[in-house]
Image 1 (cartoon, helix red, strand yellow):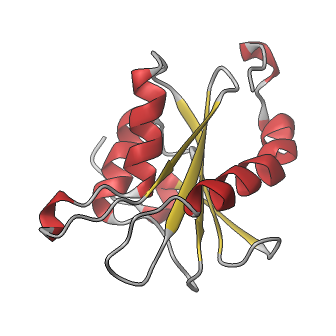
Image 2 (cartoon, one colour; image 1 turned 180 degrees about the horizontal axis):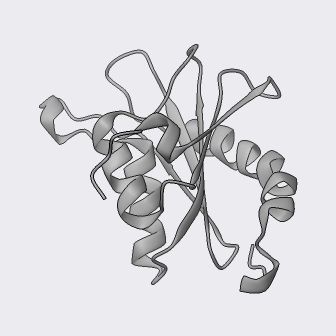
Length: 139
């Protein structure tokens, strides 16, 4: 989905959260896990494009690809560089991106990037800013 850059504001972001949730839950089904937690992620770029990613675990766990990094990498591969929203879907309570994923979020986003999470499809959405999750991140 592409929206003109000028139309991507906080009101449009709020309106797009259900679509981001749907995309994150849908892509979560493609996750390849050796553990228990399938994760899906949908990110919204500043151009209004939604990119998706899921976790892909490797038998040598240091090679795992987290859903957030997968989605952000897809955004970058498509030529976009500015991240507005990260929406994570995982069947776990109080799940937020790990520190490594937060590094990626802050590299292509900012302290005001919205990081949203949903632990059940159609359940309540928890919203944070990247700055709330990483309040002492070096600028």
